[in-house]
Length: 324
Ligand SMILES: NC(=O)c1ccc[n+]([C@@H]2O[C@H](COP(=O)([O-])OP(=O)(O)OC[C@H]3O[C@@H](n4cnc5c(N)ncnc54)[C@H](OP(=O)(O)O)[C@@H]3O)[C@@H](O)[C@H]2O)c1
Image (cartoon, rainbow, N blue to C red; front, side, top):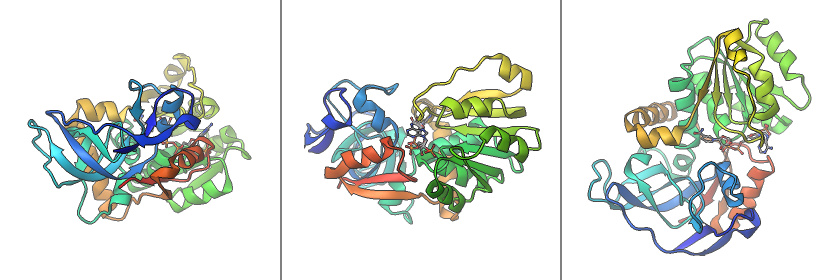
């Protein structure tokens, strides 16, 4: 099969579109014929060996997809050949991928493959993070960092759907427009505004209830000093490239919580939670309260250029790759 293959850790430049052996079906797994893959920031990190989960070389890039089940392992109980699914698992940028059954979810009939592909990883993280980890409730103030990025854009929409006042933080006027269109109540461009001061004003000095943070670095440092009593900081990722340090006296002094949000680990080990998260998310999509925002759709041959947009902080929403 044709696939985007990582065969060393020299970065995006050495990625190749080449032939790769077809995957084998596992007893609790399915073989999915991939229609559309959606990119995520880890796809930029893995080719340089910088992500926390690095498969053995050589491997097929891509973590999020939509497609059709072509074979189901003997211990599968939920999926069968012919099912339309979206899912998470290494190898989305290949024509066929082997995925664990519980990491795949039936795609609602009303949803096309392209919108569906953009949902399970990025959207699932935001839903799991905000509702299940952060216990966000109506009326609370939610700050979303990286608010025009893949998972951040969902956090804005889901935060609004859950009734929060959403403050979106991003780096350019174009991204501000996207965050506003996603429903943010307030948008802050941290490159031209003083984020710390703006958060103080916006919360009347009381601090922020929930922070959704896929960025880390300096923005985390600022938010960690602007938390409300009983607040929650959701640690989602470090797209800035810096994993921040936090003295544990800070959560103590302000009485707030710092929570790690690892959605794929949870989906792998706790399917009873992930099936509820995805049902909640599809429900919001079907009611028109959440809609995937698609940056661009590229053919498989142009996957490198698509990944470069993420690496260069240019993508708004989700970048898709037409695989099949
Ligand atoms: N925990 C989980 O389960 C989970 C799931 C999905 C993703 N993640 C993590 O979440 C993070 C974001 O993923 P994503 O797929 O949403 O990425 P993305 O679409 O590329 O968005 C990342 C955002 O981070 C901001 N950013 C700040 N500094 C950056 C830099 N130096 N380079 C690139 N972006 C920078 C950008 O927004 P501004 O330009 O507006 O600052 C960008 O929109 C990644 O670290 C990823 O590993 C975690």
